[in-house]
Image (cartoon, rainbow, N blue to C red; front, top):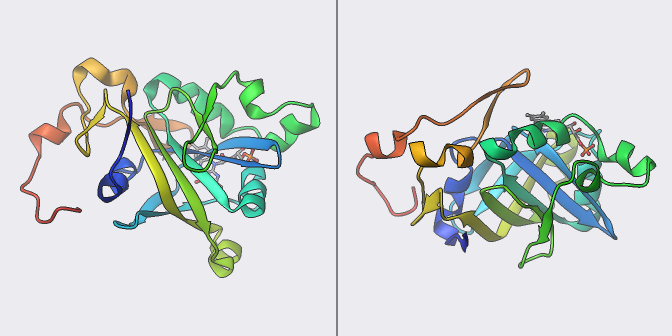
Amino acid sequence: MKQPVEPKHVNRLINHGPTVLVSAEHAGRRNVMAAAWSMPVEFVPPRVAVVLDKTTYTRELVLASGRFALNVPCRAVMDLAYSVGSVSGRDAAVQGEDKFQRYGIAAFAGSSLGLPLVEGCVAWLECRLISEPHAQAAYDTFFGEVVGAWADDRVFQAGRWSFRADNTELHTVHHLGGGAFALPAIGSEQARQLPARNEAA
Ligand SMILES: Cc1cc2nc3c(=O)[nH]c(=O)nc-3n(C[C@H](O)[C@H](O)[C@H](O)COP(=O)(O)O)c2cc1C
């Protein structure tokens, strides 16, 4: 079900702007938050950018560990995505638990960096932080090099998303703002497939 994604296709996991869950771990502390603002910034080696506000506990763990993961949630876990984007792990930590425990989120360890990855998502990217102190401080933007990526082959096959009527629970979710979400159009991939101009794009 979870299949490795070739480096040249990793950008496609978030090219269409899905909301992601950013997970991180440092010295036995782990956390996860929602982020609407993430994007690919290089094909190969695959690199990504994500905005982590200064107030977030996730940012603290990313800076301390030099690692983060992007988990791509789907319709089936949409509520969970909204929950972890509405509460800080710092508050949960005060009560002796983390957000995984508080919301009953099952996690598995990524095989590249050992980061906590969220079960029920449809794609996972483990990233090494690329240190860019100015971008981090001035724009809250964190760059990462993706060192391992996987996708659920029920909805991502041969380097492409396949959003169909028979797998709607696995469709990615897209934040419109203000707590409203959109889902990809069913069959859009097949209906509007243009001839590829190059292998990577
Ligand atoms: C749908 C959604 C999208 C969000 N996108 C971002 C984002 O791109 N960057 C960010 O810093 N916070 C974003 N947030 C807010 C964080 O997820 C929120 O502040 C979270 O509680 C931080 O958790 P933490 O303190 O445990 O790290 C988003 C929240 C939601 C619900």
